[in-house]
Image 1 (spheres, rainbow, N blue to C red):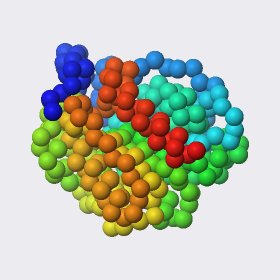
Image 2: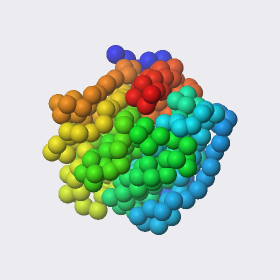
Image 3: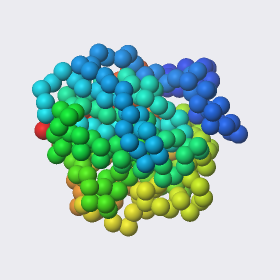
Length: 310
């Protein structure tokens, strides 16, 4: 189907403002400054019962996290949240509005993880940070006021890549238990050789060229793209992973690899709901304040989390 009207209008506005993800030969620092100057619509920050910034012990040193605790009786479910940005961009502030809304709507504690970014910290630094943070949540559940048996992981784009990788790491390492995974337009394959890459290579916010740039920043060598903890679609066995919600967008280079990962999970016996939102683009859920289709997807995420973590 064609672009839905709100998405088309937003793309036109972003093009006029120069808010693209084409970084060309920019350094990571230049790309970060560019995105900070031209932020995607993120919505208003809702009031939450309690918001706390703290650091926990991470594999690379102190690891910042932001903990959102809604007005709800403990023990609550908890959601480890990993922001998007191609493993290069993003921080706690950029995802603050989404995390506030998620905590309030899902009535659960959200722990947003400020994992190390590439290229300063290359693969597997981000994955190891997110795994360590998820383990920390389970080990400190009582202090946080959450239930260690009701912990989910969630993320968008590169954050969804990490939210897919952490359950793999947890299964392989024997802990922690993860009850659910929310993967919103996840990066799952480093080959960049799908129909959706060819169909949506440019003109729809996230481009094939920008994905190539992100991968170059993230990995040390091309062979890293084959590692399951970088590209979970390459995992030989997906059995024993937690149930999943996978969300994709029609006009997104990442569409096909997200749907392929959902199919692999299904074939491995993992309960999966996979929903493609037609007529829209990568990052549409983060644009829920502007796009009705993003609000519908956010509501689906909340409903899935409430059901899985009840």
